[in-house]
Image (cartoon, rainbow, N blue to C red; front, side, top):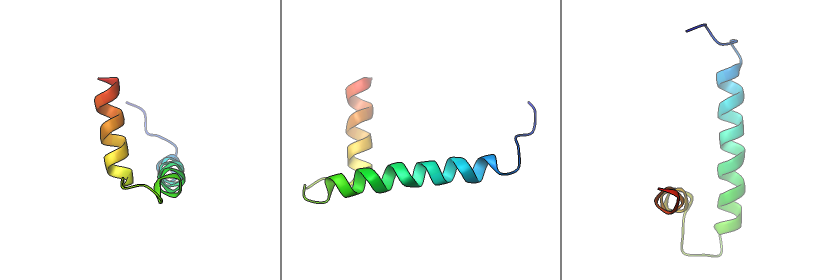
Length: 46
């Protein structure tokens, strides 16, 4: 496997953080946290 560009891991981490922050903001008034949301989403799609 080829080595990835040095900054690609950092870029992926920033995108992941942005997605988690967005979802957390949307869930803040519900009794569900981000981890639970993604777990339930996984179950729904599998």
